[in-house]
Length: 62
Ligand SMILES: [Zn+2]
Image 1: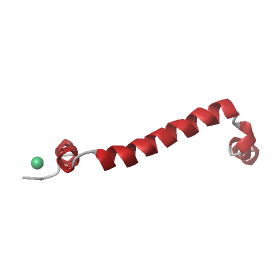
Image 2 (image 1 turned 90 degrees about the horizontal axis):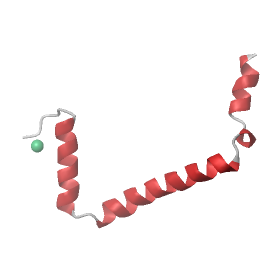
Image 3 (image 1 turned 135 degrees about the horizontal axis):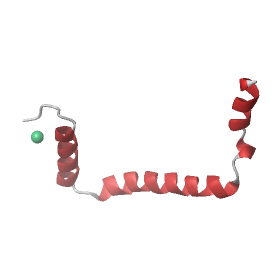
């Protein structure tokens, strides 16, 4: 009963290309932004971002 519905959800053909293609492009854009965005950003910018994230999580810093 639940096996058939679970296998139907995990079948690749059940997802149309019009849904998969934007998802692929979006994930590629996110990965490219992480790679080149972090690569071209200055070290101080990266440090400030990590610093703000650390404070936002409430971790002891300074
Ligand atoms: Zn701090």
